[in-house]
Amino acid sequence: MSSSRSASSGPPEPFEPKFDAQGLIPAVAVDAGNGEVLMTAYMNREALDATRKTRKATFYSRSRKKLWVKGETSGNFLAVEEIRVDCDQDCLVLRVKLPKGGAACHTGERSCFYRKLKLTGPEELERLA
Amino acid sequence: MSSSRSASSGPPEPFEPKFDAQGLIPAVAVDAGNGEVLMTAYMNREALDATRKTRKATFYSRSRKKLWVKGETSGNFLAVEEIRVDCDQDCLVLRVKLPKGGAACHTGERSCFYRKLKLTGPEELERLA
Image (tube, rainbow over all chains, first blue to last red; front, side, top):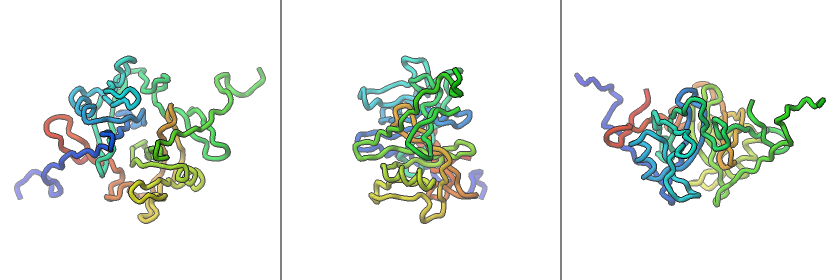
């Protein structure tokens, strides 16, 4: 075969995101540099289209019931470098870059996941070092 | 002050996970070594308790409507090293170790997120290199 495509490549696979009954799909934003999970949120079709078009992570706010460009008030936009999809297409991972010194969490922490649950004893949280 | 605790430490913060209307909380399993997102699933209270007790990631299967010890059929158990909680306690991150050469995805891929969505043109998926 003279094809330059590898034997394992076939026709392109279609993207068929499975939105839930509310029209939402969960999205996990991770730091494109070190892979750290920064935050999780939900997208509807409009948020996904806006994210792909603008390359700024855009979600659907379930509490405010509207589109939400992450960083629109704080300036902490998440620049999307890659969107990954899981095996059954019901969850997304966004590989993003935060502004230098920026925070993905509304508390001012870089990541929303800044505490851990103790694995023994009472169910208490500890701040990560 | 003679206390050995830092000024910023106060009483321990309680863990108060916010389960949704179905009694579930999403959990993102990431590789404890390199931080790669491996899979996402849901936990109910029983799954969370089992995970904390056994240190094997245990989820609630929404399709089978029962507890699901990840790896119980494949052998690809996820050994939980740390459980992180987000700011509003409605999402968990599990830092886990896969068996050597193991796969978190039922397709045999190490991670369920083995494809990316093209950012331009038609909505097609590409396998990651």
